[in-house]
Length: 348
Image 1 (cartoon, rainbow, N blue to C red):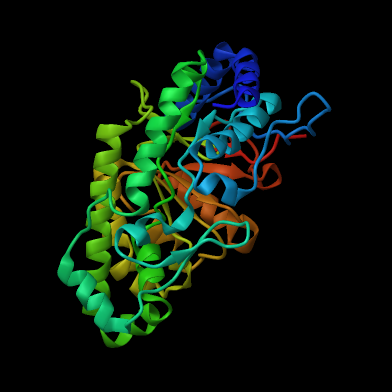
Image 2: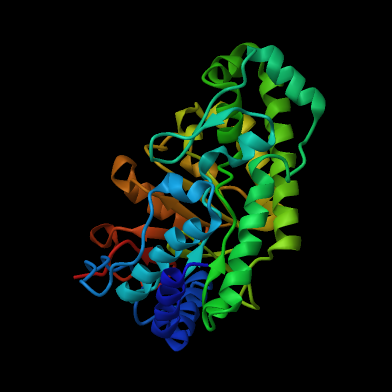
């Protein structure tokens, strides 16, 4: 490892406050227990970096094929989180983007100039999808899957040399999207028409994706582990989750309710029943978010754009189902709410 990197990681290790992290985690536990707290967890704005705080960052593509640079990219976020001193956890991931599970299943992908990589649909249309289904669930170590595990092992080995970072920083599971979202990446926009004229094909594709997803998560638990203690909390992005998984349902918000209930909910349910966790979505999901929040094993819900939704109904349904609402705008918070919510910013 470069001496420059060692010096900055040592500086980060000296900045970490384990007592503050324990206090934050205790607050999060109460949030998931729906027990009142004196202060709802929130995010602060990241303060600008001063002259002596110029963490060695690298463009995304520099880290894609260089684990040391990817680690520094990820630790730069931890450095900012420590400086923000709010309720977010300190965590990192193998950051290979949305292409991970499609690559495991044989989907083509490419790096862009310097943003997250792109996934492409399988060439060959529905015949290619039938061939994928015929092969059955894929080995989680195939293509970028194996790289995720190798990168996580590298992170762990490095952090062991810089206590207390080995205890303070969680390695959370990579971006596997959600089963239907991955099916969409593999099949392309034809998946929407196939929902009408060949729904059994869509079912079978999502089935294979779901089982591959499940096998990846089981392998992740065995080889990397989940940072859950007796409180059952793991971390993801800027929040804690009760459970082990965060499903992304960005594509699924385009579906009619009956298609969501057929092609999404049963498969999400399988994963949530086994692993427990949260669902994230971007955009407007008014027509499906009640179904989304009906899944057993779901403990939290994250809408990145609540303004685009019927936010009052969204919040009410989440409260009725005892789901923690993540990164909710303080201006939308009903009066008297003292638990079950993480705020997207510090209340004024």
